[in-house]
Image 1 (cartoon, rainbow, N blue to C red):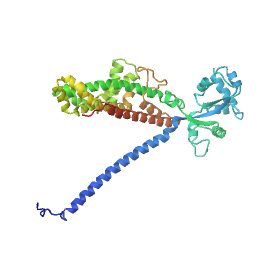
Image 2 (cartoon, one colour):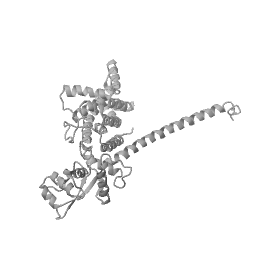
Image 3 (cartoon, rainbow, N blue to C red):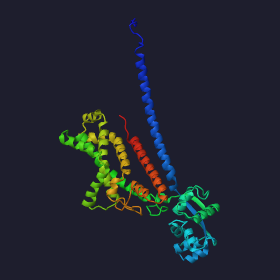
Image 4 (tube, rainbow, N blue to C red):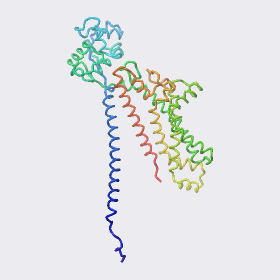
Amino acid sequence: MTDLSYISPLSAASMPGLKKRYKTERFFRMTGLAAIVASLGFLAFLMLSISIQGMGAFFKTEIRFEVEQAWIEDAAGDSYSLLRNIMGNSDPTVTGRTAKREYRRLVGADAEDKLRNEIIGQEIATDGPVVIWLPASDDVDVAVKDGLGTTASGVDTGQLSQRQVDWIMGLTAGNRIRTDFNMGFLLNGDSRDAERAGVGGALLGSLFTLIICFVLSFFVGVMAAVYLEEFAPKNKATLFLEVNINNLASVPSIIFGLLGLAIFLNGFGLPRSSSLVGGMVLALMTLPTIIIASRVSLRSIPPSIREAALGLGATRVQTVFHHVVPLALPGMLTGAILGMARALGETAPLLMIGMVAFIADPPSSFTDPATAMPVQIFLWSDSPERAFTEKTAGAIMVLIVFLILMNLAAVLLRKKFEKKW
């Protein structure tokens, strides 16, 4: 039998050192846990504050009116005249030009559009009054969402007069004010009137821009990575190229905007403020990131895959494109989509090529004038109207959802194309 008598227990002198190590380990563990909890707390606070401010952008306030047949006939197909008849005759207690002007400002700028779409030129099924809900103005909308109507105390009424506040209280008491889902916020383009403004144009502009960015940067980036990693000779020229690619990944984004302004706009004369130019500029910015991510993905493939293919008689090109690239594709796609997510949040390069312009109509092609979500948020945050505050927060919520969907797509693509060896 083995003699274990020489093994002595821990001496008393070593115990304090062991306790100190355990104490240090617990300290670092608790520090890491506290850091994670603090990060999640800050994130939750940020998301909660944005949601509270921006939730109102997805809803709109409407006021109910009963339109008499005589008012429709008197308007003779003119929506402005019909709106004037409605606002001038709906409440007999509103008398005087000043009072009628204030009463008219209870409805928004797109009230005429709704009258034109739902009454003017339409067949009316009833001989009695026609009930229609007209959108409220932005001041009324914000005040009602803040609680005006239920109570008048403690509510910031903004530029509303006391008479308008009293009318809103009366309309609420008569069940003539409601809050409905605002589909126009997701479909409309930008507008000077807050109640008309939406993120639809910016969403389409961002989508068109990202399509151009992905088509250019992904294929060029993957081919460049394949050449540098699999075929390029290891010499000083290749090393110089690799160092510059790594440096380009850390260049400020506004530099790429200046490059796009000089080359694509001033040099090639491409259309200003278009998704085409925006996508090309973002492709230049995203290209180094995709090249680096693709090279890392190619390096992760075991050399045995290449050796087995070459041993069975495959050429170098067949080995790379039939075996190595398909196995590295999940990592390439993940890097590309994460690069797209970064490009989606960029504002500075787009400002340099004119995508900061006011664009009222959503783009219908890649060469139409367009804007992007970050630029739209920047423009709205600088607007003085109170209603644009919730529009800004609402647009941030839409942008965050867009980013989450892109990252989810990256995970799903990685799982779909992932192969085990």
